[in-house]
Length: 329
Image (cartoon, rainbow, N blue to C red; front, side):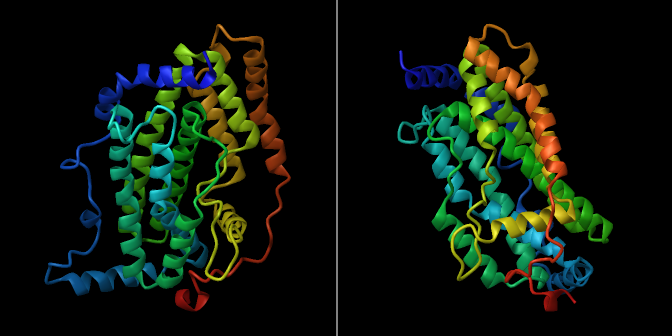
């Protein structure tokens, strides 16, 4: 039997539990928070006063903070790319409306709220150039991404396990910074989004955990493959208006690193957390090739930590079209 057929068989086996995954890791529409819960109510007589208060508090937040907020928002707004990518994974058949496609649609429904909320907050804040933000978002959806997973569910679930935790870290740090500057409402917004991301991380990492139980060697090799090629961030093709593909991503990453929102150390820490979560050191019944992959994975965080220590960030802060300093001062 080919590797592809085995993958498909494992996905079909796990599909029997999708309803329990949905019950455990996702929240019904009527019970989960919605963006309007955290924004000024446009039907209220106090709407304009509430917006004015939001804008006044937002003035206290520094330039790098707004860059991080915009980057997080654009990443969330590129959701059509992520849904269409996951729907193409082996074993997830949207036309058949099977259990896995039901999971993806409901996961998408939860994730969709994040971009809605952050976008509206940015618009009301008056701190950013929304047209530039919107053009960058459209470019990112147009450009898509290339994360090196193909249609392989094992590699894709490693990616989502890692990426959901990385997104949690970013939103949670932005929440902490907003609180430091006295914007308690924005802090709560980002904390709620971070909570969703952590819940989704637990879901995707559980999918990997279940695969390790039935196909340990191939799952180990997939994990090694993804760590060896490094996890590519979903916004790695980020560009500003008039730029070529991917030109803004490194500059945005530098800003996030300087602000402490998402750093090279966080990347290593997430890798270590996944190794511990999946108990990589205890998995048995591995082929010789998978044993070598395990050895590689166990040593990798220490190696990556040494590399991250040598990271040098540019001293000058890049000025993005999204956030002009004049708007902040």
